[in-house]
Amino acid sequence: MRIHLSRPDITEKEIEAVCAVLRTPNLSLGPKLPEFENAFAEYIGRKRAVAVNSGTSGLFLCLSALGIGPGDEVIVPPFTFIASANTIIMTGAKPVFVDIDSKTLNIDPAKIEAAITKKTKAIMPVEAFGSPADFDKICKIAKKHNLIILEDSCEALGSELNGKKAGTFGKISVFAFYPNKQITTGEGGMILTDDDDLADMCVSLRNQGRGKTGAWLSHERLGYNYRLSDINCALGIVQLSRIDEIKAKRAAVAKCYQQNLAGVDGLIVPAESPNCDMNWFVFVVQLTKEFTQTQRDVILEAMRAKGIQVSNYFSPVHLQPFIAEQFGCKKGDFPVTESVAERTIALPFYNDLTKDEIALVCETLKESLNV
Picture 1 (cartoon, rainbow, N blue to C red):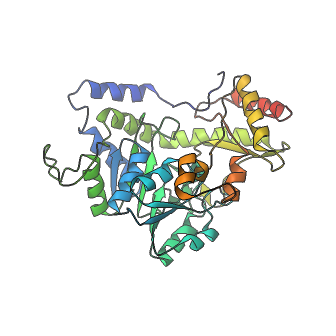
Picture 2 (picture 1 turned 180 degrees about the horizontal axis):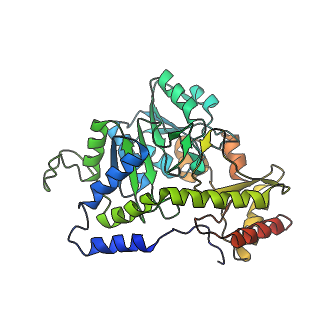
Picture 3 (picture 1 turned 45 degrees about the vertical axis):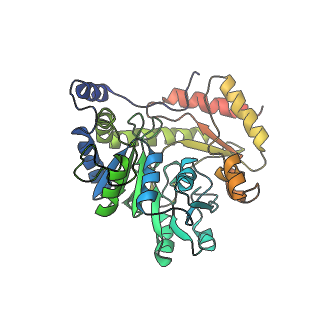
């Protein structure tokens, strides 16, 4: 590919930090773990942070720490990465899908209450593509019905709504650090909460169920190895220290795309929702409704043939075969999600994408619209 879909932004500082850890005996459960956790908690503005080996692990540990399991229901949007629903299923609970708003692409607050039952224990709203739009409204609904919010902030590090940071709306929240995210640790995630009991339980569950003493052969409960190594944490510490720089770079790339694609027939170009200060995760355009999924797929292939790596983003979770079979979901259940998913095109997006590269992507897209 001439231009890739995503690339991490790694400097000599990150490389030096990782190499410094490799020169020590503390490759895991060393001093970089609490250093990263403390820095992250301070940045987000929450009392506790618990580092884990992926956002998926983080979501699962949060659900487990909250006591969610068989017989329970958790409300979640179907327009998300599969891990949001998978982690609910992993606990034995049932994901209850609620369609999204066509403009924000986040779960539609107006549709949540109709999905609440006596079995509902939590809402897992997702900040799609980095936008916390409508999370204030979701919080009000959760409070009204005495429901827990588990905030899936895996795509939203650095984003804010009315000056309130993503990751501070829920009782507990999760970020992720895969290489295409705003910051990366290679693989990794972070749980955030102000609740010491929840944080302590997540710490135990990520470390084979060990207690507060950390005694290596003492296990108080069923646990897992979801730890994040000091190597990963060292990378994350430097990345987090650059978050303002990274956010500015991503904003500049998004703005350049918006300028290049303004007024193009057949395209819906993403923009920040009102009162949102967004740290862009990806840049996903939509074709207008007269386009079919087949036409969208032809455009994707045409762009790839010219060396531009693009993708659809997301596929509806409720139509993934194993979920459709297990929960009886079918096409037509969530029309907004399905309509949007059929028309999305994720364009190359990363910190150091140049103006010339963006111009080439946009020209290729315009040409491909006429294929």
